[in-house]
Image 1 (cartoon, rainbow, N blue to C red):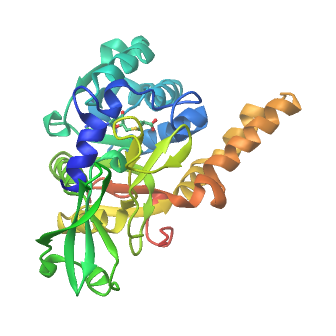
Image 2 (image 1 turned 135 degrees about the horizontal axis):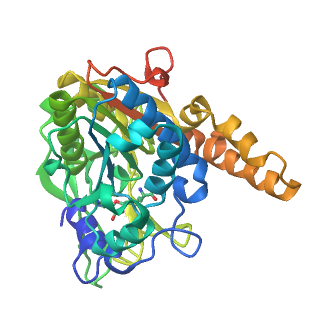
Length: 350
Ligand code: SAH
């Protein structure tokens, strides 16, 4: 089967898929995402939402959309911040949660019960109402399926997954060969044995968002691990209980993700006339005021609390932690304009 089929079955199968039964998030789960590490993450994105709302000239109503909201923590921190800092932004926001997992929808409903009147759920992003859009997606794109190709004798052969004579799962080389014509040059020059990852599912989600931004205006933030330069090659990974595991060891029981190739998303944005910029998570959070917010939270607290806040800041923003590997992609239509942190001169490529 194709790698994307394997990922879809392992993650989303009705009976045995990872998201149907697992406890993905938090200390007892398999991984901890930035909103689960600290409330400051959602608070700073809340400030980005307010600034974007102002750039849109304060519409009387807009969609505040999150893709793949997990436990609902990011939206909780974000709405608390908006409500506190900008009554008109809070008033105008209609919250749209895009989520496929019924189990997670229930958790999100519980977490956000205080905002019941302003929120609704969609299974897909193509049903967004005709209104300006401010969208956030944290660790969403990495969870969408990818296909892999391997370069053999100058041709990109599709990598397939199957079982051997002993029923062990493993990779195989397929006969299906990628048409090189549409491939960017940087892929064509890669050496023999290189692995290339493409994700039609990712492109499709981002294309829907681009279409909406060009019709109805607004801005979107995609935060994820990945590269802005040459893709890394084979990045498919399984994570269980905060450690990497073999992708074939426990299909359906371990989380499967891969790194996001941000440059390909910027290319499709440009094609649609949408502005884009990518900066590191560290640059984004410090630019939005992480250090100042940490100082506020730690003021007049004991050393234990202050030390905890300091370590959380490190974890989110330090280059050897999440600060550099994680990138923030901002997409905006030309009328809205790009947020100040993403304009030329601020963007980095690595
Ligand atoms: N944003 C959260 C959770 C990230 S995990 C956080 O940062 O903690 C990925 C999330 O995307 C989960 O909520 C998962 O159920 C959801 N998801 C995965 N595939 C999806 C799809 N095709 N459509 C909508 N949601 C999806």
